[in-house]
Each structure stands twice: as structure tokens, then as C-alpha cells.
Length: 489
Ligand SMILES: NC(=O)C1=CN([C@@H]2O[C@H](COP(=O)(O)OP(=O)(O)OC[C@H]3O[C@@H](n4cnc5c(N)ncnc54)[C@H](OP(=O)(O)O)[C@@H]3O)[C@@H](O)[C@H]2O)[C@@H](O)CC1
Ligand SMILES: Nc1ncnc2c1ncn2[C@@H]1O[C@H](COP(=O)(O)OP(=O)(O)O)[C@@H](O)[C@H]1O
Ligand SMILES: [K+]
Image (cartoon, rainbow, N blue to C red; front, side, top):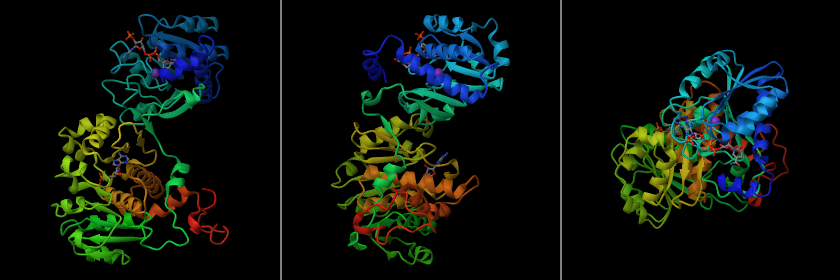
């Protein structure tokens, strides 16, 4: 951000960027207030440019008739911004707590990308008073106290109802725990355009997923579409096998081969599965393996890792995982740990992974030379190459935190791998569809892992932009024709 801003500022009059930021910020606040005239606005103003943004936005609101008071929290505050506020009829609050108690809207301009650590002690009481007042709290660029680059929150931070951010989304707005503090996020374009470098983090959108989803060509057959092998389930956990197969059947592979002791349970639910008692090396050719869900003990992991096709390792398969063995593989490996499994692999505590997800997922990907999908309230996908952006999944719902939903995800991801997607694309596309399916299935109520699997085709159609059921009037042969995309994708 700083490099891009400096390059842009070099060709602009002094203060022009801050004015763009303030104009966007004031516009967003006006929208939230509904009526600006007569509204009571309080600015929490730190010592840097973040406070400057708040002051200039406050000046704009004051010119439209809002009563605007500034609460200075730095040793010095932005002088140009303060002068503008005073010229527009705003003032510095004599009694911060009195103005906060009556506020309709509080602008948090304490720190932005220059903030380090949680809030300082002098800021804590006013931030608490802002929340207690019932005012709408709008964070300027970032909620103060969160780490812009990692999403970590060390100490106290502002809990905003909305955040107006400038130029680009910062990782702290997309990765938990900080993401939760940001509320609804709005991006204001300040003209950085092509000056922005390769991002640390990227999020797929519908159109990206539509481009990535495999579509069978006219001359496809089930083998050319890819066969995925699923090594999962045990006498103790037969259900994990059923759920992993359920995900795999909806992921675009032409066939699903199940290998393990839960074949009867799998066939009872999915007669289309090719079942083999094992071991995996004897089960026949596949284009990708999934191993781990519900295995209990872990027979076959070495066997599968020795294969020359992409392998996804999840759950119980992750327990004995040796970095050297994974790094030595001739084909890609995808690991899909939740925070607890990631912590065990890293030799740290679950809370440490949850507090620093971005760091943890990068560390694991580097250590194993694998693509790592870290599950949880924020799902991240890291490539083994540290220069490739981490993908953050924008879909999902906390209702997904239900037993077995991870098994569906591993089957789905393996199926996309077998269909030929690159590991990072397979993992992030699967997370996207899985989260979308969960939202469709939950609609505000508890959901089961099985319902997530059953909602996957609907999520696929949504993301692909394919015609919905009942509206399927596209030209004959369009869908699946010669590898072309369905219309509207
Ligand atoms: N660059 C541009 O062109 C544009 C930038 N823009 C805006 O500038 C923002 C970045 O501004 P910035 O670099 O001045 O840093 P900023 O976020 O205000 O923080 C520094 C201040 O915070 C203080 N402080 C630090 N930690 C703290 C803590 N824990 N608790 C409390 N205070 C703490 C620190 O104090 P110090 O350590 O110096 O004592 C210093 O006073 C950016 O986020 C965006 O809003 C837009 O206008 C668009 C154009
Ligand atoms: N708080 C949450 N918000 C959104 N998604 C979550 C949350 N907690 C877990 N999930 C998702 O739910 C799934 C759970 O997977 P996992 O932990 O492997 O469970 P299981 O082993 O029971 O299948 C993952 O896709 C994960 O990202
Ligand atoms: K802020």
C-alpha cells in the first residue's frame, strides 16, 4: 500500500489522496446516517494519517450540517485536518465521554496501516464508551488495534459495524480474528489501479470459479474426466467414508473409487461408487487420491504417498506425516488440516494457529512443499511457492462447523484434482463451492454434512452461471459441448 501510494502521490498535488479517501469515507457515513443534517458525529483521532482521514471526513459532514466533535488521542494530530474541521464548524470535544454518550456515529481514526499492537491504554476507555453508546461505529481503513498484514489481534481493538477501506482490502479485513472486528467492509477506490503489487492474499469470485470448474468435452468418457480414489472410513467411522465419497461424486471426476472397510455403507448410499477392499496400490488406476477421513489408525498412507498422482491428505492421515516424505513426492500433495491438526503438525498450540492463520498456513506449505488448505472460520489456501498469493475463501457460514463437513470437502477437492485442476485451484474452488453449498443448505438453520454435499450441484450451477432448473432453455448441446462453458458463465 505504501509503495503504491507513494508512486501515485508523486504525480498528484499534496493531500489529494487523503481528500479522495475522506470524500469516500464521508459519503459512506452519510449513507449510514441517512440524514446528515443534525446528526451527532464523534471522531476518534490518532496521531497519524488515519486520524487525518477522519478529520477531513468530519469536516465534510460538518459542512452538511452534522454536529462533529473530535477526540484527539495522539500527542499531535493532523493539523491540516483539524483546521479543516474547525473551518467547517466542528470542534475538539471538551468532554469526550459526554459527546460519545450522545453520538449517532463514531469514526474510528485512531490507527490504520501504521498501527502496531493492540490499542494503547489511553484509547481503550473512549473505544469502550463508543460501543456502549449504541452509536454506529465506522472504522477508517481498518479497525484500530488489529494487525493490517496478518489479521492478528494482540490486545484490545475497535469492534466496528462497518469499515471503509482505501485502495485495496488489507489481509486484516479478510482473515480472522481481525475480520470479525471489521463489520461490513466497503472499498473506496483512490486510484491506485495498476500501481498495486502482487497481493499477499486473493479471493476467488464467481467468475473465477466459473472459469476453473471442469466441464466435460463432447468426446469425454468417465476415465478421461478423471477417477478419484478415496481411502477413508473404518469400522469405527464408516460415515466418514460415505461423506468423503458424497463430496467426491459432486466434484467433476468421472468415477469415484472407494478403498477401505466401509464399502457396504458406501454402496448402500451411493451404488455408483467403485468399491475395493484395498490396499490402495491394488485398487486400480486413479488420477488423484484422497486419504484420511475417519481412518482411525492410518493404514495405507505411505502406500498412497508413494503413488505418482496428486494426493490429498486429511484428518487421521495427517497425524504421522513426515515432511521429507511429502517433499520427495514426484506429484503434488494437498494437506487439509483444521487448526488443531495444523498445530500438531507445527508443534504449536491450536490457539496460536487460530491467532496467526496466515503465518501458519504459509509455514506448513513451506515445510511440506505442499498446497495447504487450512480450515476454520477463515479458510486459507497456501501454495508451496511463497511468492504465490494465499487464497482466502469468501464463502461459508459458521453453520459449517458440523461433524463430517470436512470429509465432504476433502472428497470434493480430490475430485477436482482428478479432473485436472492445479492443486491450489482445486483446493480454493472446492472451499468456495463447499461454503456456497453450506449457505444454500443452511439459510439460517443448523445443517448436516450430508446436506452440504447435496447442495453442491446447486452451488456449482450458481458459480458457473449455468441455467437454473426449469430455465434450461439453452441451445442444444451447449452444456458440455466441446469443452465450452455453459452460457452466462
Ligand atoms: N499514505 C497515503 O497516502 C494515504 C494514507 N491514508 C491513510 O493513512 C493511514 C496510514 O497513516 P500513518 O502511516 O500515518 O499511520 P496510522 O495508521 O495513522 O498510525 C500511526 C499513528 O498511530 C499511532 N499508533 C501506532 N500504534 C498505535 C496503537 N497501538 N494505539 C494507538 N496509537 C497507535 C502512532 O503513534 P506513534 O507510534 O507515532 O506515537 C501514529 O500516531 C492509512 O491507514 C489510511 O487511513 C489515506 O489517507 C490514503 C492516502
Ligand atoms: N466458525 C466457522 N465458520 C465457518 N466455517 C467453519 C467454521 N468452523 C469450521 N468451519 C468449516 O467446517 C468444516 C469442518 O471441517 P473439519 O474440522 O475437518 O470437520 P470434520 O472433521 O468433522 O469433517 C471446514 O470446511 C471448516 O472450514
Ligand atoms: K482506524
